[in-house]
Length: 296
Image (cartoon, rainbow, N blue to C red; front, side, top):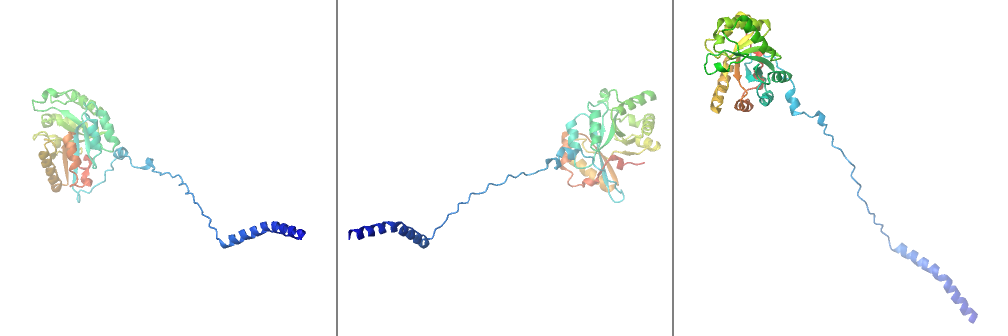
């Protein structure tokens, strides 16, 4: 009997692990398991925004691109030629003028400190350049201001020629001439005959600034068979806002009445500011270089 009891105990000891395994297996079948999947956010790839700055328009480069002057038919388009006189003293003012969104012509004083630099800059912008030739005035207020490049009625023809050609050499790319002051000289037949002969020699056109009602410049330009025209409007005889506006309106009337109108202005800060603000009512395509508003 004792032997039988010991045998039973041994059997039970050997059978427990197997039962435990079976119990665990049954629990595994009865209880479902859930596997939690933890997703780590993927790192965003590095990106580069290509702006191609070399291809973006540079404002200064845009200003330096030559303005292409279209050819107009005067029969169906009335045009305005704007000449800026007294150029060569203020380069910043010239930069603002060259940045205007319409065609201008610049006339450079030969004795100005930046005459050559101003002429070259204007030419690089595709703007026509003229020699603003100082000439003798009948106004005693300005007689003492006449310097080496002024043409006088008491000069010999040789002196007259030398002063003119020295002045012309100071203004590269000049294609034409207009008078600075000159109320006395432009009224002198002999002087105008000499001047137009020099314009013909150097293949220059002439624009009479009409500083005197007695001027004979246009008459002698026509006789010399050179291209010419005369000033119609002074924009800034006064820089008061009301007078600038009145002169501008006169220019608009001039353009409507005629095929072309010639207006003179100066690089005063008030004038430049006015021009920057007053062009919206007049098509920029109606502005032309002076070479497109000449008579022959």
